[in-house]
Image (cartoon, rainbow, N blue to C red; front, top):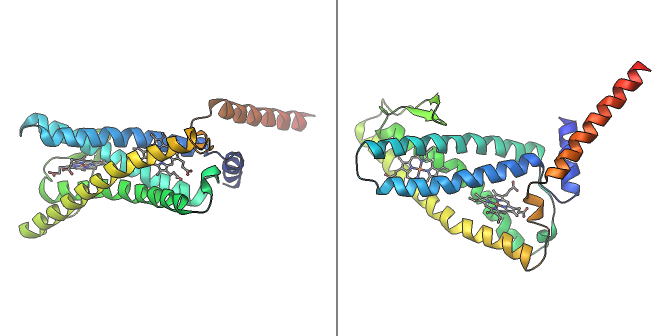
Length: 220
Ligand code: HEM
Ligand code: HEM
């Protein structure tokens, strides 16, 4: 654990996110963009088997986002506080950037949970599958009265939609800010979030050298 934290700090000292943080960021970003487009497209399909299939895929991907986000939150809070970079100067821009990041974390956990609640309250006969393969349980709403289940559905749907709107507004602002800091201010913030393959190779090479040296000194 301490070794892992030191490895992350090595990246943070170079003002970079660790490869784990970078992988979390880009995998989730790709899945979320897909999910927003697919959710919107699914809503517009005529009622029928295609719509049901499309919702199955929407749920399957959304549940993957939920699990990745829970792992990512644990990683972020316990292992990797994130680098300080040029964009961290005191002022409103930094405050807004950090608030947006928190909002992304909260939204990307509450969105799938609200979707899960919607399906559990009203469509529990359609089994959920994590990533389309692993069975996923329904939330325990089946013993509640019908009006209560409809109320849960209504609130979950409102929350789902409000979070979608928040994301649709915040993502372009976040991407615009990242590009503005990179191209206008020439800050290092975007570089810190881009995959650094050569650095990763260098780390692996160093770890192998270290292992070899230890083996040699044990044999000597
Ligand atoms: C980060 C993950 C997710 C994102 C970004 C997302 C996004 C969306 C979008 C853009 C829509 C269409 C707009 C709307 O009606 O609100 C939608 C609808 C919906 N989503 Fe998700 N979703 C996610 C996770 C999930 C999960 C995990 C489930 C179910 C297990 C789910 C179930 C639904 C349902 C049932 C609807 C239709 C709501 C309605 O009838 O208005 N979603 N989602
Ligand atoms: C759906 C799309 C995206 C989402 C949900 C998202 C979410 C996030 C989150 C939650 C963080 C904070 C990471 C942490 O500290 O743990 C972050 C950081 C960052 N993102 Fe994104 N992101 C998205 C797309 C993008 C794109 C397309 C770019 C580049 C053009 C980008 C550039 C960055 C940069 C540079 C940082 C580091 C910011 C800093 O340390 O101050 N993001 N993003």
